[in-house]
Image (cartoon, rainbow over all chains, first blue to last red; front, side):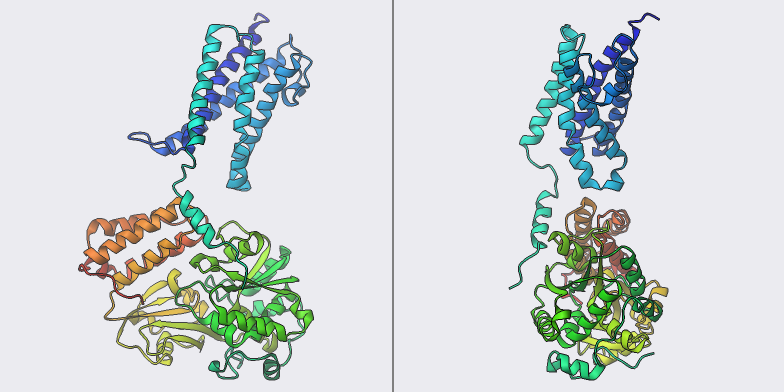
Length: 195
Length: 381
C-alpha cells in the first residue's frame, strides 16, 4: 500500500463530509420549515435529516481517523479533539477540530434528547449554525484540492444552497403553526400582581 | 370513622369562621411533625383536586425529594366546581391548619396559597384568616393568583406559576414542590385531631337538581342520596357526569347506586375527580352536551402540542357536526379513530383527559350518537 493512500482517503472523506453535512443542514432547515408536498410527507425530511447525519458522521470519522494515523502528519489523537493543539497547520486544522467538537455536542445531545428535554436539545442543536461554516472554512483553508475546479464548485454549490435555504428560513419568521396560539395562551397564564 | 365534618360549625351563609371560633370548636393546631405523614397514609386520604392520588404517599415522596414549597391548590378551574372556594370562604382556618401540618410533616418552609384569580371572596377570607394567625405561622404563607384557565389548576401548572411565573401544564416533573388541594388539606386538619379519616367528601351538585351547589356527604352515601340532598332531580335524569370534564358519563341506572367513595369509584373504573356530580336531565341531549364540553376543552388547550391543539379542535368540530347536522357514519368513525390517536400525544394531561371524557360519551351514548337528529346545541349540563 503506497504511503499516500491515507492522504487520499482523508481528502476524499473530507469532500464527501462537506457534501453530506451540507445536506444535513439543508434538511434540518427544511424540517423546521415544515416542507411537505404530494408524495413528500413531513416525516421524510426529518427521517432523511437523521439518516444522512448518521452517514456523514461515518465519513467524518474516516476523515479524522485517516488524518490522525497518517505517519506524515504525526497529528496524534489529542489534536483531533483539542483545537489548535497540532503543530501541523495549527490554525486551519484547529477550525476543523472546533467544528467537530461542536458537532459532537450535537450528536451526544441528540442521542439523549429524551433525558435532557426538548428545549436544551434545541438550544444545543443551534450550534450547527456555528459548526457548519467553520467546517467549510477549514476545508477552504487547508484542503489539498482547494484550488482544483471540482472542489471549488462543490464548496460553492453546498455553501450556496445552505445560504439560500437558511436566508429564507430566517427571513420568513416562525413556521410553527402553533406559534400564535401558544403565545396567546402563555399570555393568559402569566403571573399577575394581586390587586 | 371520625364524627368530625369539614362544614360543621356555624351556618355557611354566616361567612368565614374566625380564628377564635375555629379554635374553640376544634382546639388549637395539634403538635404534629413528620409522624403525621404515617397517620395520613393510614387514614387512606386521597387527593380531592382530581387525580385522587393518596395524600400520605405524596407526602413521603415530597419529603424524600426535599420539596421546597407547598402549593395549596385552590385554583378550581373546573367550570362547575364550587367546593374549593366554598371551603376557603367559610372554613379558611381548616385550610390553613392543614397547610401548616403538611408543611411541618414534609419540612417545607414556604407555603403558597394558589387561589383562582376571580375567586375574590375566597381570597379575601383566606387573607383575613391569615391576618388572625400568629406571626410565626403567617410568615410561611404567600398568596398567588391562579389564572382563570382550565389547565392552570393542574398541579404542574401550579408549580410552574410559583417557580417560573407562568402556569403551563407539563408531564415532566416541575421543581421539587408539593401540591395539595384545599379540601385535602382541610381533611388533614381533622385527621390530625382525630387520627382517622373524616369519611366525608365535598361534592358540587350541578345540572338537573333542584338545589345545585356544594354538599358534604359521607363516602358511604350514594349518588341517589346526593341527588335527594340537593332537592331531588328536576326531572328523571338520563345520566350523570362523574368527576367533572375530565370524568366520565354514567347511565343513571348504574349511577344511582354508586357510592361517593374514592376507592369504590376507582374499583369501578370511575373517579370522584374534583367532586362534580353533573346530572343530565332526560330532556337534554347528551350529544349536544358532549359537543359543547368538547368545544370548551379544545379551546382550553395550552397549544404546546399539535395533537392536542389541532386534534381536540377536530374532535370538537366532528362532534359539533353530529350535534347540529345530525349523525353521519364518517364523523362517528372519525371520533373513534382520532380519539385513539390523540391520546398520550401531549406534553401534559389535557388531551388525555378530554379524550377519555369523549370516549365515555361515545360508549355511554352510543345509541344517541348513531341516531342523532339535526338540531342546534342547547345549554350545558
